[in-house]
Length: 364
Image (tube, rainbow, N blue to C red; front, side):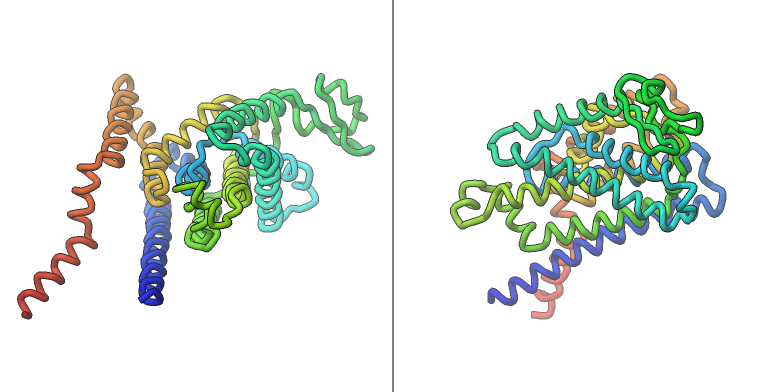
């Protein structure tokens, strides 16, 4: 019986994963087809790569918020680390590594690893504690990293790299010197290597890693900690270790989202809108409205709420009013117990089950 139940559980998780992959594929093929036929506006075309970055952010944050059960309010900080680390690398090597297919994968690895290192540093002291300390610390981290980037000046000349926190002139570079990070002005001359196809591939990789983690032994341990920390500790689960695994993986993919985001731009600055508190809250809204712990829901909510403001732009004054109404309706739809029962009752799985019961009765 146990073996059969395990097999049934594996089939269910596999079906859920395949459905998620299929959803991602459909959501890639639709805009790709529209682009090939010229049926999509330039404005929406420009949103496709950032949308992929936001989807990766939402999936990775759902690992922390939905699967681990910890609140993070500074997820954009890890995105900022990945963005600037990868942009710095790409600007430095764009003249020596001319192949996009070599330069971009290296930038992705560097951005993800840099964000993961910061996630590890932030997580070690905080994840040992109980309570909402992670939310406070990540909020502070997100604001600190954004402000630190805005006062850093890094340049390169024939003598090597130069660093300052005062101004570009304070680096005292030679005439052939070039400023790479210019304080609040950020980084310019970034190669625009990111495409919608690259974004789709990164979304699939993110889904593959996170879904496999969720359905693995480590994933079950992480969810056990979320459901009951005391019970998890009592059966020998190393709580800090598994919390750290989930948080570092989440930070790693937030860094990758930052790489994708920044390589769609020619210049990068750390502002409140793209790497500050507003961005972190926006991604958290996507996760909550899609359903905490629901990966498919995060993807759908991110796409709808990214495209909706632009699609409603022609309504001018009423655009944000309609957007707010949609947010409220989605919140009710995803969290109302009555609607959850309604969705379960009329889901294809439930209807198919009832159909089989009716056929069995008729056969009897």
